[in-house]
Length: 497
Ligand SMILES: *Cc1c(COP(=O)(O)O)cnc(C)c1O
Image (tube, rainbow, N blue to C red; front, top):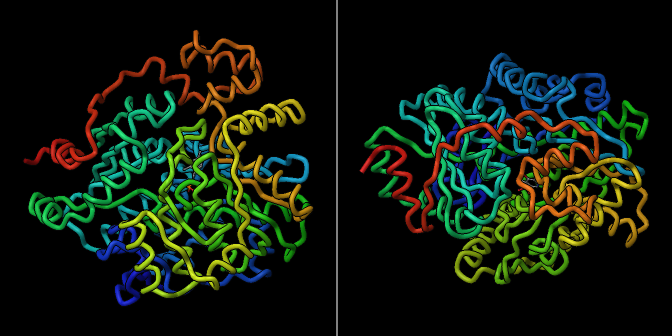
């Protein structure tokens, strides 16, 4: 199977090349040139298998240039009870009529681990296959969770360096501490004055700077990406097959029944993975795209106009504080198959911050997707309600999805069983979660670790060790920079002039 750029179908590469490069030379994103099909019979079959077996079978369909042994090694090194607490990897939790798909049992407590525990293994395999002798420099812009998950995944991985930029005032305190205390010889972390889009744009600019890339080449380095613009990030996110299989096993559905999938969305990576699962044959009725106050996607789904010219909100669900959802480009490419159209829209987005899709494309988008959003108050109310009614604690991102799921049901009356992607452990966003269920608490007077303890006393849920031990870990990084200076920070971290 080959992969082509969304902006030029003539630019074709193998999956190993797509993973090593991260982004196509023309600025487009790599997409599979065909979508493999998974029959209902095959799904029945997968239902009786473990998570690792399911992952192996689904990923093999896309990684046709990898041997079965290589895929097996990658999958087993990533998805084990050591990294994910149990062999379930991504368990389902029934909540009334919905099924919560818990994607946060990995080492950094967010769903990014699902992909970033395996990506370094896919990457080292790919580097060998492509016979690359340079050191691969993974350059990441993060709204909080990708950065830590990528640092954790790539720390001390031979042949790689990992450099992470996060917005100085755009991540939670826990997220910041997680990154600044990262161990490993090959890691670097800096914050950017600005928001996530500034950091992301800065990173994209470095990727696109030909002269700088030549210089890196002469110094023995080559850039790659661990953001969800990298195909290797999306592929492991096709865990919706596993969720479906578990629903079959539980007797919630029969093979062939449709489900809805509701995803708290930022860069459109996680929900796009569910879209591809649907294209492969997973029976999906609606894709429910949940946003926070940065509701650019809600408007897009409802109007066909993507317009990032609006104020940016810093919310209690910071991993979704994004106005440029990069992976939408892949969806539009898949729906239209029109590389000229897609390039044009992306050019308009770059120039005017805005584009409008054709009426036919808009029709497909609004038939298949439901877009909704909620603000911080409503997010808190959802956390509190679900805690009071079910004694189930959601993080802020999951709560946005839950809120929008309820809006969808109220609006449509649709009773289709729904999988809600739960993307973070509630302890990771402790202040917002604790104040949601303890409105009287004076959290201004508490530090991060007091809040972890208070949340533990209130709920009885175990504090993840990786978070409680942050208290005693030394901070290793203190670089802060303007977005224009990111390139110099990269040079500094690599030790080049
Ligand atoms: C990254 C992230 C999201 C958004 O996922 P996208 O793939 O960027 O849409 C939602 N919730 C959490 C906790 C995240 O870390």
